[in-house]
Image (cartoon, rainbow, N blue to C red; front, side, top):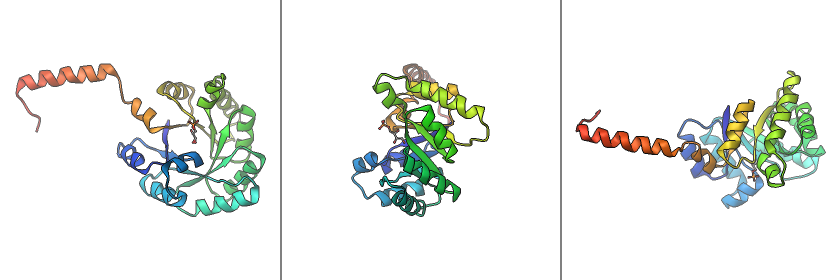
Length: 218
Ligand code: E4P
């Protein structure tokens, strides 16, 4: 399973990339706004840090302008993945860009029917938002299971399932059990995954016992 980080904060991306566990990055207009920095500069910087796909989202809503934005974003670096919303114009744009060999992440997916359309449009990734479904009382992980079942039934569909709007490590573990290809995680959730109180307790005990030996490895 691949791990992407869902942020436009370059410092956090640097810190997490240094673990060697980061396979890509997703951004969206809200995350760019939160960074307070120029969009294109941020994307270029992230692409220089991470080798894997870096999602940069178009902000137009009509096909013609989305396509022009997509071309501009794709020209920033070879690992830019153009993100388009799951609308008719978005999927029309996805079809053209993917036909040109440009990676496309179709975002704001909330139903299996939408995911099926995105795959037919040649999306590299489909981003179902599990947390936002949970927020309105629907089980976001059920949508992931449905999409995986549908895509598995048609091996010619190459779209990868990118679990988005992740709120906690339990989402990640559930997605992994289902065989989702990717999860994009807020930095805090990725950091949470490293932690367990028994790890801390066990390490403290080992270190205390080691100190009693008076030895050193180096
Ligand atoms: C994914 O690409 C989106 O940027 C993101 O996961 C949205 O998450 P949110 O629902 O926490 O805003």
